[in-house]
Amino acid sequence: MKLRIFIFLFLAFFANTADAQLKKPFKFSTFYIAANGGTSLANENIYSVNNSFLSTDTIITPFDYSLTMGIRKIKRFGYEDVSKFKDGTESAYGDATTIGLSPFEYLFEVDYRRQEGNKYLDQHHFLRYVKPLWMTKVSYIKEGFADIEYYEATQRFRINGKKKLSFNIGGVQRLAEPYGYNPLEEWLIASGQLHYTCLAIEEGYSVDVYESEYRDPNGNLVAENATIWNQVVIPEVLNDYVEKKKNELDNQWQYSLVVGFDFYHYKKNFWLHSWGNLMPYHYDGGGEYSYHNFNDGEQWYDYSGGLIFGYNLNRNVGCFIEGKYNKYWNREWYDFKFGINYRIF
Image 1 (cartoon, rainbow, N blue to C red):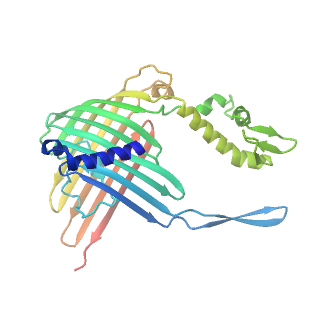
Image 2 (spheres, helix red, strand yellow; image 1 turned 90 degrees about the horizontal axis):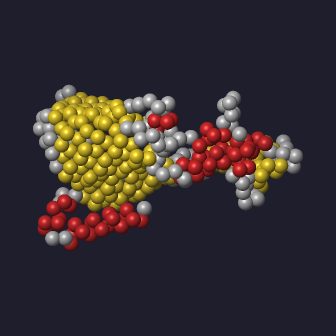
Image 3 (tube, rainbow, N blue to C red; image 1 turned 120 degrees about the horizontal axis):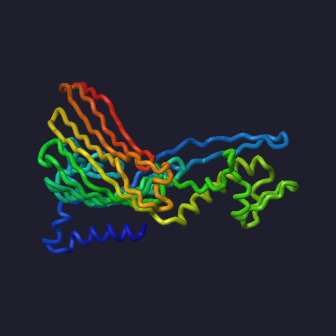
């Protein structure tokens, strides 16, 4: 985190101190820092009875906030609003498109947020270079809310590169954790049941059923009955174990074939921007944690796409649809919005 902040500050400083030739990659770029906040969920009272005595606990959810920092050089599409300030809350669907309007574009953005008491770190970085006959893009995506993180590089040939509708084909290289790997499978028995108590003991917990004492690896008492042990402690043990085992593994390379398209048309009263990418074939390197092993040795489809549509029927009525969708390694993340506007004069 500190390293990326340093890089952003360095780029901003570099843009103001380098000579004219070196400034060119930063011309028309924007460096921004923004903070946003608001009320989260209302406090919730939880009631329980212990030895016929009523007790009340209150769940307090702290306020939501987000801290956004980035630098971008992306030419705006015709349908995008030109606002005076960038506040970090915009849904810039066009940033996810395969093809941009300028030959060289980039984005480096970090978004740290707290939502309903949970903290997430989102990052979106890319460098993109587009020519009429080919394009290349290197990116890093981290969606904390969707729990997805990967590096990606692609090189593609373009067909009809100067037209509104263009197609592309090439290769994609991705580097990510071994999605599909489930550390808990080794603790499953033939009936499908999980030896969770044995797992907890191996992780350092101790269980004394007769004394009703359940202690963590540090010797602290964490439960005084089997109900609390099973419903409260064990879920935490399993989550910690899965996270630990996944962190012990190296990221895995995935080499895939990709085909895609991009369509862009803009008029003042009607615009349509759509793009899509399909990875129908993935090279199986035979690694122990290859996703092929978790997919019964079969191929699968990874894909992504987006749609931005707007139409003003007349001076008063207009409608819009905007959204993007991703599915990698059977993990999905998406967002969208649509609506109708009626302007009263």
